[in-house]
Amino acid sequence: MEAKTYFASSVPAAMDAARRELGPDAMLVHSRPAPEAARPFGRWEVTFAWEADTAGAAKDAGSSGSPGSRPAQARLRPVEVMHVEAAAPRGESGLEDIRLEISALRSAFGRHTGVASAGGGAVAEVDADAVESLRATGIEKDTACRIASAAADGSGHAGSAGLLREIVARIPAAGFTPPGAGESRTLAFVGPPGRGKTASLIKIAFRYGLAHRIPVQIFSAGAHGVGAAEQMARYAAILGVPFQAMESFESLNLALRGDRWKGLILIDTPGLVTTDQQEMDAMTRFFSRRTDIERHLVIRAEARSADMRYMLSRFAAMQPSRLLFTGVDEARSLGAAVDAMIGSGIAATFFGTGPQIPDDLEEVSVPKVARSLWATKGLAAKAA
Image (cartoon, rainbow, N blue to C red):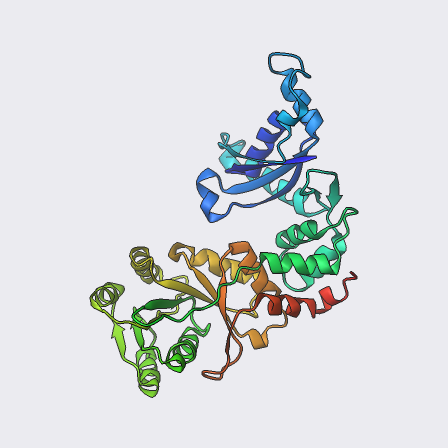
């Protein structure tokens, strides 16, 4: 068996192209929204598996020369990627496309999915028990299927050691290196209200700035809630660091351009709800001009995976470069956080582990996160 991935505007469009090229027996392995970098090629990433000999014979039969005129190796390509243009919508207002797309997704994820092995060998079924164990931690089904299929042995069984290995390999994390002498590093904290952006900023100012004798400067910009600037000013006074509150992001941009500060610069942004589109647009324009700023999207660790994915989509225009999870001490499992990191591909640097300032903050340790999942009921019960 071999695999081929199509990028298309819809799952049905990819299915049509696959069956034309690979034959009617092409099997849909999985489909998911395309990663951001691949969006110009299509909104969906859809993978099919097929018997190499059958598909190759079909291709050869339609070309000049005999089916056996080319060596088999010439048509054995373990993974291919293809961009598919969308076909014209079928049915009134494209409703037929939507129906087919939903049907295809249900077909892909509602059963044990065949996945080609890395070496192009026999197809193994995804271990349903392993998938359910991963889902019990809060990991979404599509992510769980990918982890379980990659961890499966020749019989299709995903043992606990394989699951742990795949989880560790897939979690993106980035350690924090404080700026050296004569260097500067700028971090901004973005996200909805009530997630702990301000507390996280103060913890980082102390733990990774003052504790290392690195100069710290704090800014706030935009339409913060009543008393927010005064609260930040009090924190800054306690820490003994300079603080400036800017009414707009344009003012902040001018201040940063004229500032020759060497050290750690931390930016507090207002918590944005869905109705704050004007403020969201202003922040997006600011960050598009200041790509040197690390944008930490702050999310509560006890939130559901669906809520985290929604926050990632809401703030995608700002192109967050890091994730920061607060409330880790209150989360029953870190499965949803792991799903957010793996699904988005955005590395996490910090975990907020409680309300105490500056103590309740730690850098993300991938082995520790994996062991935390391992200790949950779902994975701990999974036999090796």
